[in-house]
Image (cartoon, rainbow, N blue to C red; front, side, top):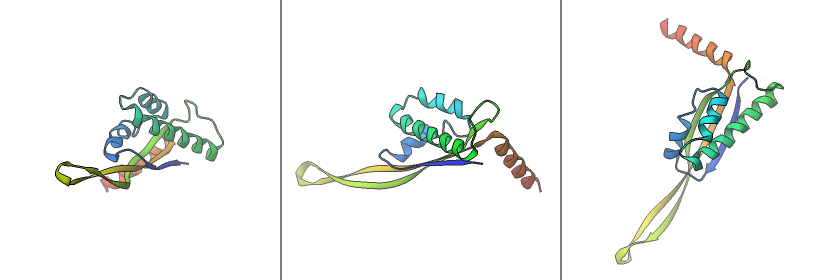
Length: 130
């Protein structure tokens, strides 16, 4: 069973957030948490780390079991979509105004066990060969 966690309207640019989430896609949960903990983009990684912990808790709630080495929980899918954009005005020279766009994003993380993810890729490979 897969578990999903979503974070809506995170007040950061989706383009910059994608740089962080691309580093953890397809990794084991333990490795992904370590990558996020020591990431250079700390402000972005904190949001993703908290969301990943929420996805792990959701998975534990669904399956009524703890995470260990045998479960092999991985980050199956993670993506960032653009959220709302707040439009602000900043004064510019000669009585003009420049528009400032404060962007936000929606993050979705899907975690699943390693065995299920491997079975899905095997089925996809068989379908591609046919």
